Image (cartoon, rainbow, N blue to C red; front, side):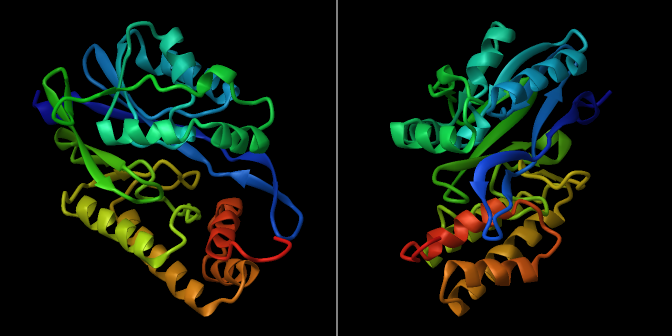
Length: 290
């Protein structure tokens, strides 16, 4: 059996969940559906990212127990510093003793900016009493040379800088011809523009996508993910096109609501409009009454 066929990948899909925020029409805003990736060998496995609410953590842990089938969860890799990708770590490290949590040094440094009282209030306002109080801590340790192995297979963490936030990474698994893209790539849901309100930031995100594209992966797993969406490499180009369209429409708009309406018209089938609305408000922060 070759190395390439000795690994397998499984996805846990967490559905959209309601928030305490509303859309312009007054309806409830939902958080994006999210997937996490489990890559397993003969006897050990790697989890890429976690989820963030208590209930999600329990569901993820139950799924891991079932999917691991006696294999040991050896490593959890965190792609970037957004809390919805690492807040379950405290729960999971207790449930799976001995698991090693790793990330790049740059991403770990960025995590520290995401657990301040301001950000804790952001998450708790959106999801009241749903996030465990001990979630707001950093458990990841920095990788040496931004790589690790599982049963002889190399996993390469690639720093790309800014995408939907600062200091983001993707994880390249050559023996699967796969990239786990974190939030650099989105799979047919609205993209988080809240931290990219300026053109220079969106240009940096486009650069990150070009870096990922150069690895020429056959499989690209985006964390925020339309239910049933296939993890094809075309999602990279679709993400590029979305950013370019958002940028053009931002230049043509005079308010957050106008931009929101134009992006919805351009992408009527994409879900996750709360994420879009927050991004539009970031582009027009001086709007009154939004």
